[in-house]
Amino acid sequence: MLKRAPLYFIVLFAFIAVFEGCGNYQKILKGTNLDAKYNAAVMYYEKKDYQRAVALFEELIPYVRGTKKAEKVYYYYCYCNYYINDYLTAATDFDNFATTFPNSEFAEECSYMHAYCYYMDSPIYSLDQENTIKAMNQFQLFINKHPQSVRIEKCNGILDELRFKLESKDFQNAMLYYDIRDYRAASVAFKNVITDYPASKYKEECMFLILKSDYLLATISTDRRKHDRYTQAILVYGEYKDNFVTIRYIKEANEILDNCRKADAKIIKNNS
Image (cartoon, rainbow, N blue to C red; front, side, top):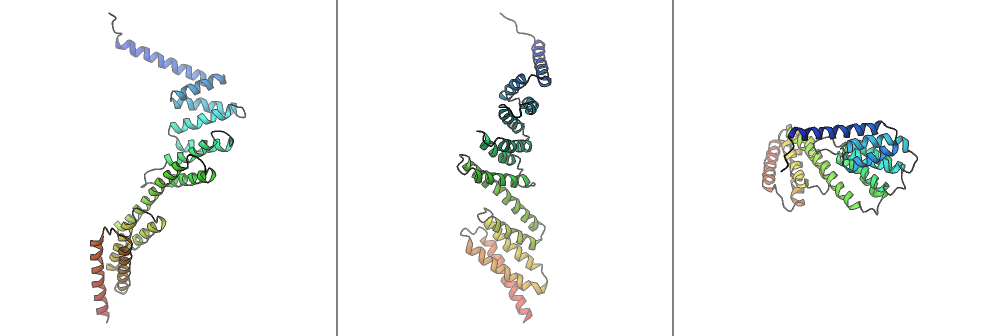
């Protein structure tokens, strides 16, 4: 019966294998044999060791420029940066590929990936949405340039997702005004959400919050402004009730309407 190798031998052999592997990699990286660099780069890429692969492909780029290998080397290089989650670098690389090799079989794919990298770098809706907007612009450019592409449906799906992210961001900003009791700014911001996103899932909530903001603004207004602002709130109530079948907030909306009418009637009586 064979005895098991002691654990320290296993660890030792593993360490030696790793050390030799690192030594071979450094030798190839610093060497001048371009074929060896390319073969090693592809090997590491296929093993999903993208950190090593990207360094080798980067070494190869200036030497293969203008040759038949340039296209494939740069294609691998783009995806290496993508797979190590360096999305902004990859976005630039994919764009450069599509521009440099417009007749390549990979040109359309890289044009799509240029937009997709910005999508991957798009943060949650509460953060700055610069890359969300860049992604939307680039996906729209891709659709315009490749209207028959098999990727169009996916592009449209991503665009819907990104629009909702911007919509959520704008709704959140409007809620911030409401929460700090800047009701005039809140009313305007909720109206902008409805205008900018006509099919918004927040549409009914925005309409109700416009009503509530206008009502609360009236309650804290000077006497000379109260009548006009209560009247405005009553008009908004009518728009809300006319436009929403479900009327989720109708109980509170009716209470606001009743309060507006009573307060306005009192103002009219006092001024008569």
